[in-house]
Image (cartoon, rainbow, N blue to C red; front, top):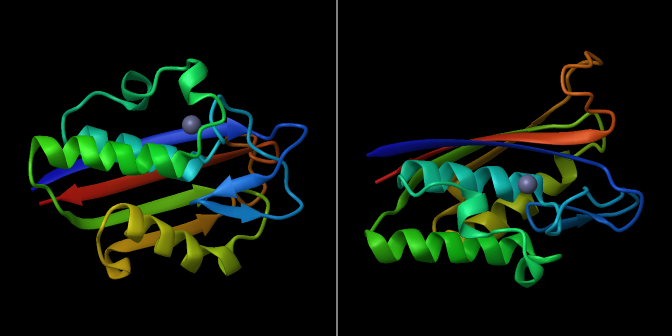
Length: 155
Ligand code: ZN
């Protein structure tokens, strides 16, 4: 068994569409990033790489023209491919918390879990997503940003 955790945070940009867990969320702007800004998938990628003792997302996907506006689901799929090529890991379980004052995410969580379970080739029952606000506490100034924490256990 190997455990890994990841954290990521991005501010909202002034244009584009918000994408979380590979799901487009209407009426909210994209998160400012070199990629599509999918903060949830970035935290999951770092958790996976941490568990596999393989550095971090910036090492695997440097900010260059090749990764400009890249779909983070492609990054997640490639990360899992690199990890499982090295060793035959499977996902025991993945747990995440999305910290966002807005938007309300409950209606999108099931679709996000579905996307992640497809990309990691595991049952949706092994993927848990939680969304929380900070109850107005300006802890990460998350009126203007979304943060995410992910923990994974690999077998
Ligand atoms: Zn990121």
